[in-house]
Each structure stands twice: as structure tokens, then as C-alpha cells.
Image 1 (tube, helix red, strand yellow):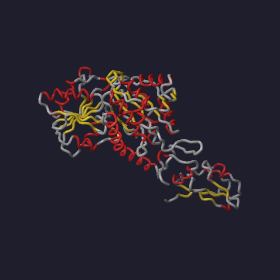
Image 2 (cartoon, chains in turn brown, orange):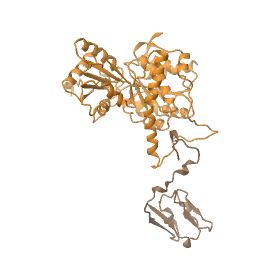
Image 3 (tube, helix red, strand yellow):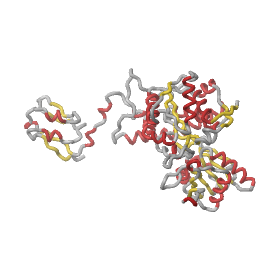
Image 4 (tube, one colour):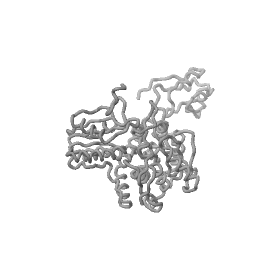
Length: 86
Length: 384
């Protein structure tokens, strides 16, 4: 992205701010434990847990900040946080 | 034609001729007469501008920022505590590259509360990304506003500017001033062409969030624009000279420096006193000169080094104090002359409106030539 004078940007460009870089731990989803309740997507403060074609869930790691709320809420303990080396 | 008028009125008259479309300001001593005059001109339909009344300086500059982003030529004026209240907005205006011109009627900052002159207010905003020009007299104060708009609105620059002139010493003083006619100003300063603007048909957000991957590059671009402002100022100042006979192409201006051993360095109205003091010292065979720093941001370090090449001693008069590390101008002049072998001494002087006479200037020169410097000049030790 070329810098635009005055930090000006057209609508929608905030998508380019990939906040996933802030993360230390990343959530790892285990679809085999998933009962498709969708609680993880509901509590995600970034709105970046999305439903897959199979009806299970996965995080968008471009924006996931690694807060771990999805791990806390999952009734089946089907999400673990893992240290991420960058 | 020379007219006899108050400095504040001269600035208001020249701003009227610069045709700002939006003015937002909050009255504060000693800037008040400027914005009173402009409010009157708007009310009298002498100027086709919207005057936004606000409840604080923070709002004044915020309104200016929005109006400038919408594509208007914008004006404000403030001083001291008012400028301090604008601190946050100042950085945003520069980062968003809005070419706002604002008069600073230089005044000290509290505490202790003081309405009197020094240059602490604008100096304290030196890192904000605003260009800073300092006027020696009311003619220069008026002229620098026209030049400021031309430089700021240059698409190679796109930065805001403070035009600084000393509170009371200039703002409330009557001097003969030559004001160009409306037609002459229009010919020198065409209507503002925004680089980009807020437009509902083509929406843009200004001052977006930048992650660590981009923030530094944005700051680098502002700094590069600052550096380009030097050339833009030289060009605009030269064209001003060609049209009006008063040349401002010099970022720093020497007075009797050619054969000087000792040079004073100063900004603003104190330069007038210094010139008179130098004339008297010259009559007594003292080889003294003056370097007037007209542009403090961007800092003309190379131009200062060139101008002071031949001197052996430099005495910087600082009407400000970076508490804990001497005067701001002195610090930067020392950096500009580092390795030159020139002895540079800094003198904190005239804070909070303390009067400076010719004999004070001569006393500073005496101190510098004795090698005594980096001190507060003229302290009343009996009250300490």
C-alpha cells in the first residue's frame, strides 16, 4: 500500500489493519469436538470467528488478537490456546 | 501606501485579503484584537467567510481541521494557554496535512499566570509538524501571513504554519504598515486548491489508524514535507519581494554580520532592539552583528552555519526555556554549529514580559565575549 497524504483512506480500508499481529497465543479449534453451538463466534470481540461449510467454526487469524474468550466459553473444551512463534 | 495601524489590525486586514472561507478562534489576550476585528469584518460582510464561535481553543482548531479537510482556506489565531489547549489538535492537523495558517501572539505560559510576552507557547509546539515563522515587526507579521498560505498550500508541502509575533510588543503597537490591495493579494495568492477533501460523493476518512507497519513511514513523510518547505518558502519569499519590494527569500537574515567577531542570534521583535544596540556598539568599534532566525521550523541549521561562518562567538537570546536543558533556540544553534570551533552561549532573557533595553543587549555581548553564558540574564537575585 502506498502511503496516502494525510493518512486519508477510502471506506473499508481498515480491513488492511491486520490486528492478528498483536497476538501471542493463538486459538486452535478441534472440529471433531464441536457441537456447532456457535458460542465462540458470539463472544469473539473482534467478530472474527466464522462458520465453516461443515457448520463448525474457525478463527480468522488475520484479525484474531488471541484474547482466549472462545476457549473460556466453549462447553466442549474444543479450543486450546497455543504459543505462537513468529 | 504606508498606513499607521495597530499590529493586530494589520494582521486582521491582511487575513481579510487572503480570503479565508472559515475562521474559528477563541479570544485570548493578547490575540483578542485580531479575532475581534475579523469577527467584525465577517459581520459587516466585508469578508465572505464563516466565523465559527466556539467554547474553547480545542474546539476552535478542531473546527478549523474539519473545515480545512472539507477544502476551505482556514484561519485561526491564539496564544499561550489557548495554544496549550490545542496541543492534541495541532499534531492531528499536521499529520492530516491540512494547510491551516494560525497567528500566534506570543505569550508566556503559566504558572505563574502571566499575560506578557515571551515565546514559550509556540516554541513548546516545535515538534508538532507546524511550520514556524517569527516576525520582527508588524510589516513582517502581515507579510508572513500571505507567504505562509502560499507555502502551506503548496502540494509539495501541505503542512500548517504558525505565524508568530510578540504579544503586546507587536500586537498592540502602532507602526506604519504597507498593506497590498485586494487585487495584489489575489494575484500573489490564488484561491486554495485542496489536494484532497472530504466529499460525500467520493468518501474519504482522514487521519486513519496506522499499525506499527505504517506509522513510522507517515511520520517520515511529514518530516520530508517539512524539509521541502524550506525551498517553498524561499520561492514564495522571493516572489513576494518581486511583487511588493520586500524580499523574504532568506530563512535567516544577517545584520552587520560581514566582519563581525561576535554575533547575536534571536527571533522576533527583540531583533529590532538588538539592531539598535549593535549600531551603538559599532560606533564604539565593537564588531558585533545579528542573525535573525525568521523560520524556526523547519530549522535552517545549514543556513545558520553558513551565515555564522566568520564569527568567533555567538550569543543566543532565548525568550523561552526548555526547563532542565536551557533555551530551545540555543540548543539547536549549538547543534548547528557543532564542530565549527565557534563558542556558542545561550541566554534566557525577557521571560514573562521582562523588558529588554539596548544596554541589556550590550551586556549580553560583554558576557559572551568574556566566555560567560548558558545562564538566565538579568535575574533579580535580591528576590531569590
